[in-house]
Every structure is written in structure tokens, then in C-alpha cells.
Amino acid sequence: MSSKILSTPSGLKSGNRPRGRAANARKQVGGEYKGLPDPAIVTIVLSLCGFGLMAVFSASAPESLQCYQDTFVFFRRQAIACVIGLVCMYILSRQDYRQLKRLAWPLAIISLFMLGLTLMPGLAVTAKGSSRWIGFGPIQFQPSEFCKLASLILMSAGLSQYFWWHRQILFRIGVTLIMAFIVIKQPDLGTALMILGGLLALLYASGTNSILLFLSLGGGFFVVWHHIQKTPYQMARIQSWLNPYLHPQSEGWNIIQAQLAIGSGGLMGVGFGRSLQKLYYLPVQHADFIFAVIAEEFGWFGCLALISLFVLLGYYGFKAAVNSRTIFGRFLAIGITSSITLQAMVNIMVTSGLLPVTGITLPFVSYGGTSIVITLVMVGILLSISRDRGPMPEEEEQDPLDRRLIS
Image (cartoon, rainbow, N blue to C red; front, side, top):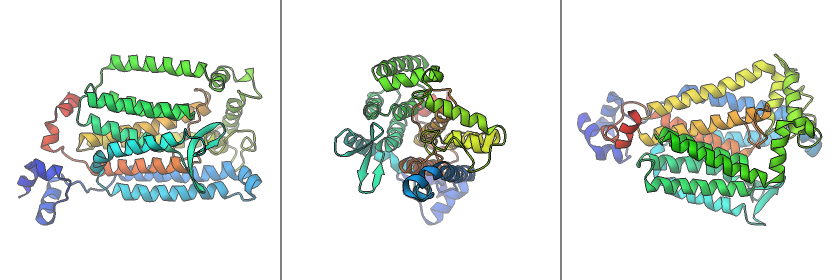
């Protein structure tokens, strides 16, 4: 009976979990989906969340006290979002990620609709010149964060069925580019670049011609540079990045204060809660520039520990992709892991002055309810993929795209 179940394509594609002796037979062979999630990923993510809550409390306490007469306001909000995200992560880790393949287009359409709402006056919530949020009473939601996940699912579902040059893939690329264009109009160039970064990671993993990818990168760079030249505040960011002391009291202020915080930390840091730069010197100290506060309070060793956690998350995330039993799972794990680690790398490089200021948050660590919930949802899907490990089913092994990836 066990050999019949494993060799029947319908039994594997139906998505229904076999019962009784059939289920036991599949478990013995090692092809059963419901394994245990990778404990290393769980440990790393919980460590990052704990580190983030501690950093948010320390970085936001002065502003929270001044604005709300309560040092725990931002910490409390972040803790609530973190709990919601962890519950979502747990629920999704116990679900079959392959069901997301059928939801790829509905999720993409929903994300496009919500992104469109951010461009409508009266519906979008505008803060600091950007209309990135939608308000539902006291709750604010950032659709561009959801868009990152929806685009990864859409592209992974397509690349698991078609070659990269198929018209279906080209159409999905077009939808992803529309998402990025709307995010740029908010304006939020940093998040748009993260969406495009996830797209490029998936195209590269699918075996797309490297010359075409480099040409696309060149064309994309030209378009982005043309957009920056027409946007005064973004051009000022480039100039301040090249020479922050040209305008130290305005455009160069952010980079200068971040570098002062990092340099003040030294090897061991000044101690938890003792940062001076967070006292209204460092802008957005509990969100975009929280890494500078961590560097000042925990020093070089604290930064090394934090960066090591992201490196380990990347390692185990790509390991889950390699061990996945489906091509869809492989692409989705690659996309999720690339998106999280790329965003972390960009945030750290921006704070260190290695890249221009982009407004990208540090995953799991920076303050932001939508960001941490969506990121933990991604991790939940990654944990679900990590449970689906073992030999690839026969019909998956015979897929022409899989043979191309292996060769």
C-alpha cells in the first residue's frame, strides 16, 4: 500500500493528508509533509524579537516619556504587534504552504488594491511627507509590507510551473513592477527597491540569463537615478551621503549622528539605556536608525552578535530551500530568506554610512507593527517549508524546470 501511495501522482498532488496505515507508511518512507520545523530558525527569530523589544524600549523611552508621559508606550505597541506576529507565525508553520500557490493571484490583487488606496487623498494616512499607511480607526496598516510577501508568492508560484521566459512569468514580472511603481509614488523608494530585490533573487535562482539580469540592473539603475534627480529631497540624500559635512545641520545630520553613536559605543558599549545620541540627536532612533543605538549601547560585540543572527537566519533559510520537496517551496524559501536578509543588510549599511539614507527598517528589531507582523508571517511560511523536507516526489523530479535547476 505504501508504494502505491508514493507512486500515484494524484495521491501526492491532492493535498489531502493520508490517514491510518497509509499515513504510517508514508512516515516510514520519510516523505510525510508534517515533520518538525527547523528549531534553529525558531531560536534565531525568537532571539531577534527579544533583542528588538529590548532595543525599542531603550531607544523610544525618551520620546515616549515626552509625548505620552509614559516610557512604555512604543514598547507596549511593539510587544502587542510581536505577539500577534508570533501567533501568526505559529499558525502558518502548521499549515501546508503549498496551499499558497492557489492564493498567489488573489493576494496580488488585494495588495494592488490596498496600494491604490494609499494614493487616494482622504483614505491614506500621511506622515513626514509620505502616504504609506491606511487607517482603520486607531489601527494603521502599511500595504507595501504586505506587497513584499504577495509578490514573492506570485513569482514563486509562476516560476515553479514555467520557464523564466514564459509569457506567464513576464506578466507576473509586470505586476510586480506595477507594485514597485505605486510604492515609489507614495513615495517610498526604499521599500520599492526591496520588492525589486526579491524579484531579482527569484529570477536569478530560476536560472534566468545572467546577461539579461545585468542589463536589467543597469536599466533599473538608470531609471532610479533619473527619478532621484527629479526628486529634490532624494538628491539631497545622495549629496549628504557623499559629503555629510556639506550640510551638517540639515541633510547630513542623520548620517553624522548615526556615525557618532556607532563610534561612541567602542567595543563594549556604554551600557543598556545609556545612549546619548537617542536623546533627540539621532532621528527616528527607534525605527530606521535603531542599529546606531544598539551600537552605542552594546558596542562592537553587540553589533557582531546581531549581525551573526541574521547571517545564521540566511544560512538556515537557504538550507530549508535546498531541502524542500517542491520547487514552489524552494523558490518561496529563497525569496523570503533573501528579502529578510537583504533588508537587514541595507539597513545596517545605511546606518553605517555605506549607503544613502533609504528609510528601510531593521527586520524584527525596528519599531513598526506592520513590519514585524508581516516579517513573522514570512518566517511562519519558511517554517512550514522547513517541515517539508526529504526526497522530492517522482513527478517533481521529472519536472523540466527542476532538471534545469539541478543541471
